Image (cartoon, rainbow, N blue to C red; front, side, top):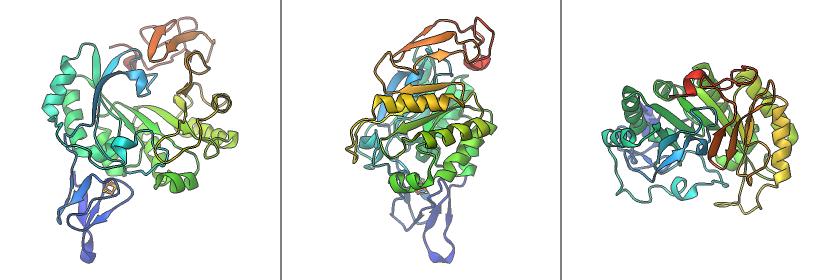
Length: 336
Ligand code: SF4
């Protein structure tokens, strides 16, 4: 698809991939630092360049309602179209390309994914995958042809047309909703809230599997009032069954505030759980509230989690509660 256009008489080339709409003179890179103008078009500098490569439990993405207990080959590259001062992955996301000597062609990556036992497919993760668009389109189409699945872990800051292309092949998304406040997005991420909400709605409307993550940072996005508004919006616009992960922040990159207190995460978990049927906590010590999947109908614990390990304690092969029959996980995402 066309991802750039001439900027009329004003000169430069406009990138059409994300809402920043960078206009770039020849040789200049966009805000993401990994897409560059050659004077006529904008090209990806990270095509096939891998920063991280690992077979991860699907729970690590985090996705809790998509083939629980399975592994997925996870890859990432460099760069990001947001500028979060609290970035938890800044080594690969905020400093441009750190090395370009680890190249994997799409057919090679797909062969590797197929060779891993019990692997459900490919996850595009670690840095922001939207800005890796061309590579992901090729890999994800090939993965689907092999009958495997594609997962994207993203900030959701993408224009509608490229998102529609991605929706052809991506089966499951975890999308960050970093705050329910546009001024937070503008002050701390260098982006804005509306396009992220639009992406969430488009993914839900397309029927793709969707889970949402909110990283809670002390004093920035930790109020009960904001979580109430966020959870209500998710319930009304994405569906009450959308899993929400409320994750604990730790000081990283430019932000030195101490880690989020446990009681804050638990309070927000309880707030969200008044509106949504599946709320989870993340980055907490083992044994805390919000790690297990519990039937919202009869309260039976269905999946017990200890770190990234799971134990099925009551989910049927069709994704239902074994006690009351409530559908918890879509049957097609439950067993291979
Ligand atoms: S993808 Fe990169 S170059 Fe394109 S608009 Fe977004 S930040 Fe700018």
